[in-house]
Image (tube, rainbow, N blue to C red; front, side):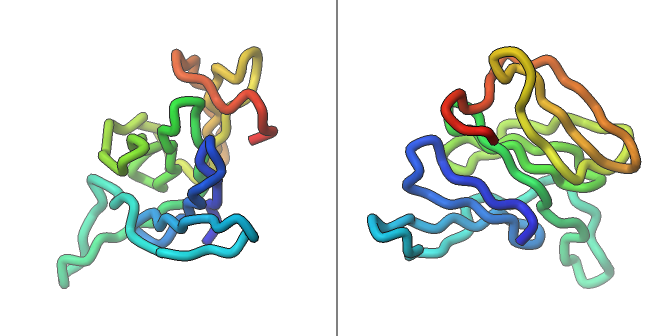
Length: 131
């Protein structure tokens, strides 16, 4: 996977997995258990067989545990800590990387299609981690 991030409490590891995001329980010794589908990307084009066309890419998390998933042509998709799709931040070109930065980590940077987008946010990235 290209996108990997820990939950704010560091008990869950999220990883991009094609058109989904997988979750793993992090054990006290650092090993991973209980792999499961955490969330599925929304609004992807489908091929002739009805399979989704598009992939989760980079992932970041905010202080409240929401995941922000760069989803190519499907923008940045936001998921609750339970895996519910909360909405999509549209981008003019495909979204391939996403991260919080800036003062108080209240700016979401999105990279894709040869461009960098800067989105002022109410939510903020984790204060105690670099990403």
